[in-house]
Image (tube, rainbow over the protein chains, first blue to last red):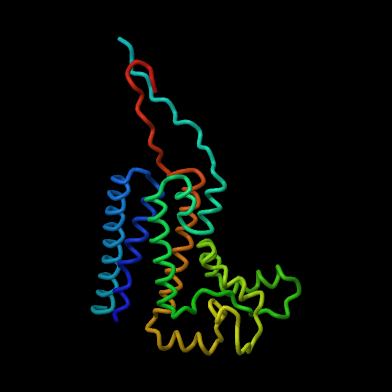
Length: 58
Length: 180
């Protein structure tokens, strides 16, 4: 099993729990959790793309 | 023409130490006792899911306190030395009662014990076992302890939420006519 398949649970839990400690309103919690999920996924994808390029083309 | 009245500062935070302790023991329990049931359940399910998923990835052998310094004099000194060699446990410990078996195993540890207490749950594995897990586990043993540490550290935020409420408090807008 690819090790990266374990990542979604981490991203979902960190986004939800962190957002829930910042707000009590559920609309705000979900809104912020989605934003954090997108931010973390984008960051990881960019890092992954950079490492892939370095290992492939360098 | 009068300028608009600036909004009043929110009332001071009332600290709830009992809820904070309860949230340390079991993630979300403090919020449940405060009546914030959905939030409490969210913390409970999410943090235990992450913690035990991490343990599952490490085949149940990545949350432990090693007994590496039996010759060290003084319990605190020995504990500090052992924590230094397994610093991950400092991050795992805030998950609460779920990590206590590791502390118990540490205090009753006897090398080569054929029948360790609690069926060996959270007992420090031997170096051979760790080497085998790292060699054959496709990095999941290490990934697993990272998950358990993140779960523990997230519970620190949950404890603070139980103690003092969320970081951004909802302040009710002042009603026209002076009533707040």
